[in-house]
Amino acid sequence: MKVWIDALTPKHYLLTKALEENFIKDGHEVFVTLREYEELERVYKRIKLDSKHVTVGSHGGGDLKAKLVQSAKRMLELTSFIADLKPELSISFGSPEAARVSFGLGIPHTLICDSPHSVFVCKLTVPLSSYLLTPWVIEKSKFAKYGIEYERIIKYKSLDPTSWLYRKHIWPPKNKIEQASAGAIVIRESEYMASYVKDYINFEEFALKVAGEYPDKKVILLKRYFSDEKVLNNLVIYGGEFFGPNVLEKSYAFIGGGGTMNVEAILLGIKTVSVFSYKTDVEEYLLRKGYLRRESDPKKIKGYFQRSEKLPVLKLPDASVEIYKILKSLFLMRN
Image 1 (cartoon, one colour):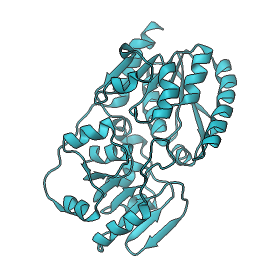
Image 2 (image 1 turned 90 degrees about the vertical axis):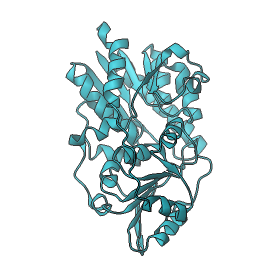
Image 3 (image 1 turned 60 degrees about the vertical axis):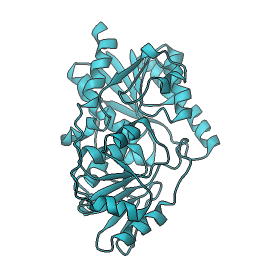
Image 4 (image 1 turned 180 degrees about the vertical axis):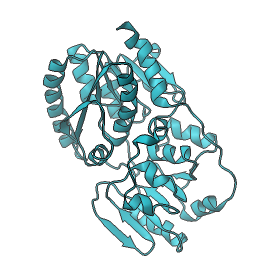
């Protein structure tokens, strides 16, 4: 079977890397499309796909008009490419272009998504998808409101970062910042250009306050859309490339402004605090079960990090294997 996967972000790319192993092992052809996007480029330069892949179009940035223009251009480019490729199945993790092109060309599109809070992406992808695959902690109603029947929403009992965390053989060698994160408090800035991020905090000011609480410990702020590095006493403000698990693996603690790295840190057994502006279903589950704390006061965060209670262990199956089993039952057994 010929399968097309469209990956737009580092998370999409890493899940694609895990999924392609399953497809290729069973003899299927996999074609991957990417886009020009700085954060995505940093990942695919260090972790290579085995499948055929090509870059089509670019990220539109934070401006609404630019987002629309780039999406329209990318859709046109993909239409020609995919019409010639003739895949029998398309997969994306929230690509409006992939959903629309697949629908227009009569290709069944499967959406793999754990972000019903991403309203605009869901409005543009969910109604055009043949099936939607999502973690078990997310209520089907959260997606059904966008225009897909309940029976076409299929849950898997895992969280997506297991796909690459359980494949340490794909982790790249550690670079300078990843080595320097050992014993450090790591902070990840929110994806403030995302449509669903509303209450965006100033992460540099916040990181300075956290660093002030820990004068004898290194604090690393991982910035977005910033290619430089600044050092302010014990605070390192870093905008270069990094691979999340490499940074987190030996860190002292993690403060996350988004969902994916929070889950990565928890799965790696790192004490984690969320300052994400939106409470997702996944985050609510992690909060209820005691894997995660939500706090924005640096003094209270310090108090939590210094407590010695043992963290609960989050054990889940490999999400890519669970997803592949579903895809196999839906599509691949027919060929």
